Length: 67
Image (cartoon, rainbow, N blue to C red; front, side, top):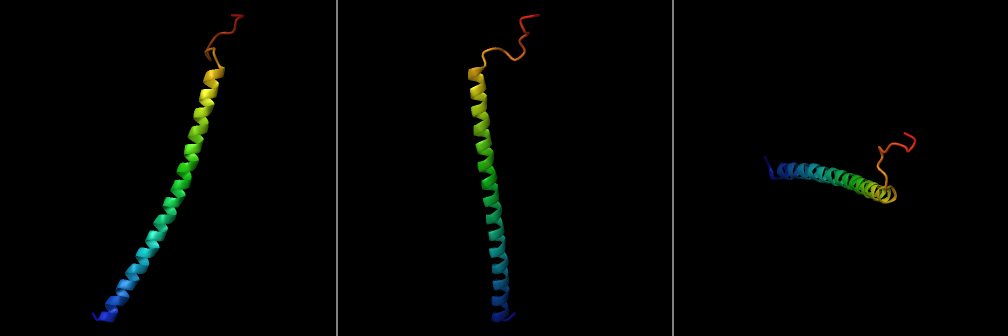
């Protein structure tokens, strides 16, 4: 294998590696966006639970007074 063929082979491998890195970077970006969205949902749910726990003093399964 000549030096030129080796350089061409290396350039091809480098191009594939760069493409893979870019693809992985895009996937990580998408996952981070999803994580951020899920964290916001969890925070909203936690706040909702705190708000309901403070405002609701009676148990959910309590019988109405007419029983």
